[in-house]
Image (cartoon, rainbow, N blue to C red):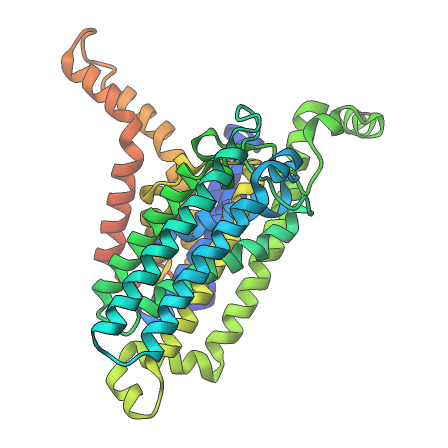
Length: 434
């Protein structure tokens, strides 16, 4: 069997499984899997650029995805006028003073001669700058968060169309990636892993605690949609008449229509990113990145700036994860910082890349759809399996109760088994790098 035929069959099998879910269960469920599969495929594409192209081990995917979600809030949510009037400018002034203090410390460190005077000046600038920053910033934050904290209590956003938030989310993630990369790239790979994990936890902690920015654990709800609301379609006589004439229930048809609209938007973004990623991989830049990945010493001996190229690809991959994070927040219609967990947004994305095929963009996309399908369906399948196993056991049996309670964790077992099987029988992934 030729490679193109094999790869095509793999995609057909995955989409066949999703279609079977629509036939046997619900098309709403199937389209939900498709939409999150598209977003997961984009995340896997970003991680694949970092690991598959350059061998960079990023275990902070969760943080870059969360920054993309924050981009949706900053861009799409309407500004809270009362909060801005109460303390918005003071918050911005405090942030500006903090940045100015850091810049002054860096300037003093670079311009002054080494010695005690430089150390004393650096400490004085940082201490005084921190005191001034906290005095200005904390007062503004308290004033902002006191404005109707049950429903707002934050500054809000710019009130722009939510589609603009997708590239903004990518830019926020790229900025964080630049900071991490400038700090950790050029060191050993384990230092990069530690740095990315640390920055991801810091980002989540900020989102959970800085209510003036993202309402913290109170969540931001009601993020505007780029597609119609189901209730609006159900109240449209033209839509109801058309669906009724075609023999569909208008309520179910409205939900399916909205999901199809999201699928079209997400598919367009995925195809555009795939085309750009494939073009980059086939370009001299892509060949250079693979050469650096395979032998950094040889590439550096040929005059390549390894650290700079690593920074480039690290920023690009993180930006793609940020775009996917903004898309996911748009799909959910809310930002919930408490749901950003490493299991979902780091480990699962890495499983997608490894199972699909590291270094192959089509493999990353296949892994995104396959692993997300298994992640969603493992729990109901596990309940059916455990129910069949325990059907002959007596009622009240401790073993039966234990197995039934453990059925909810079948998805974790499934991910581990799938990963082990692929690493054993196809260690380069289902669609390996050519």
